Amino acid sequence: MEKLSVQQIIQNIKDEIIFEAVASDYSFTIKISAYVPYACGAIHDGHQFRKELWEPCLHTEYERWYEEDPETKNMVQSLPIVIAGCDSRFEYDLNRGPDEAVFVTAWGKQLWKYPLTEAIISKSLEKHANFYKVVYALIETLESKFGFCTVYDMHSYNWKRWDREVPTWNLGTSNIDNQRFGNAIEQWRLSLSEIQFPNGIKSTSKINDTFQGNGYFLKYITQNFKNTLVLATEIAKVYCDEYEQIIFPEVVSTGERELKERIPKHALETYNIFKP
Image (cartoon, rainbow, N blue to C red; front, side, top):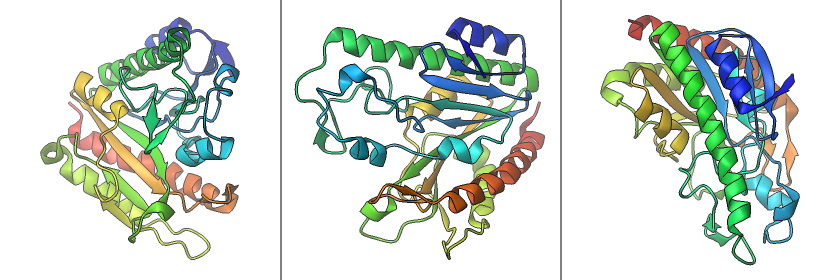
């Protein structure tokens, strides 16, 4: 892995260079081992929280971890194209637009003891903007090269906070063209439901049950690119104990192994339908 500027990363993408890099400010990573008509995002995987935010933040390290999506990058790390956030969404949320990416309150809680300075906010928003410059270059290159692509927008959610039975997998589709992509969405839902986890964990899969796919990452790509399908894919945190902050590596590795096979299969079937 290299450390590269945003400009260098974008140029590598435009030149279709194979590379793996971390942004020079360590805010995100990107890996491209082959140029294929699909990509994976893990924008809430990050846990970094820069030191100048420690004192004003009202929340503990555990409380930040609880609202993040740990292990989502690891579950797709074997795929050819992966872009992932390194910073905690408590600093700035890549799944919100720039006008609301730095939270004042979130999940019903006040985040800061006192208002953050404009300088602190600007530093965070610059990282947000740089990430989306790279996303734009990536999808532009894939659409130009292949004519169509699919993005697997990987997230996780705290299933124990719900007071009803919730699915292992949830697909959020309210902001994509369901008439055009309905069959591809259903095939992805069905594939996820077939995964067999250890420890008796069920693999139920539903559409718009717990979340509807209202994130900025999906909206940004969908609004800027007409031939890219973004599948907001949430896994319940069955791969950890969300209250004890314990990761279950055998469950994570199962997810990785299954997604390594299922994402390319689904992506290529989808591409064959929608390619120009």
